[in-house]
Length: 193
Image (cartoon, rainbow, N blue to C red):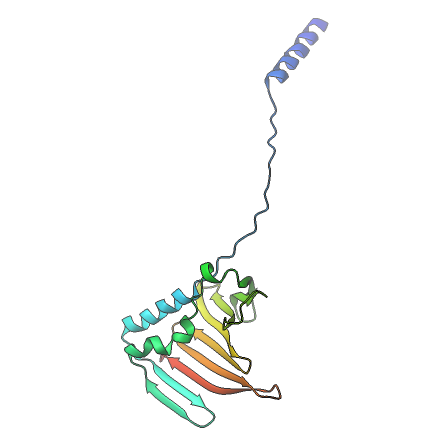
């Protein structure tokens, strides 16, 4: 019995020597995740192209404290009418050094919100201060884009693009006492449902 036990023990030792246990040493390098900004400008160009393809002439409503003026917008006037939404080009390649991205699910408005805020390194010459992209979780489509541009110390431009429906430009001025007021509003509407 002891010979059998010795043979089994020797066999186990030999078997265990042939089986090599290798442990892989994993080295992890901490890489900073580079945000991939939503290409807002390309999206708006696509929306403008959809308006053209549909053959729709949007209605443009300009309002200020004194009057309201309404006109049909001609296709040849699109570039000028939408210019504030198209400059600067918003994508990862040119603004990544000046803005940070944060994302969250906003259940109050039923959307995923991507917010882009200026870093301290933002040059004074850059009018764009921040922008938000709202995505519907149900349809996985863009609901709205909101941008803020600082034109001067006393003048701010707020831009809202409601996907597939309308866009609005609001000019807000600040007086010497620091009070803000709306000086002009422009709405361009192409969905009349």
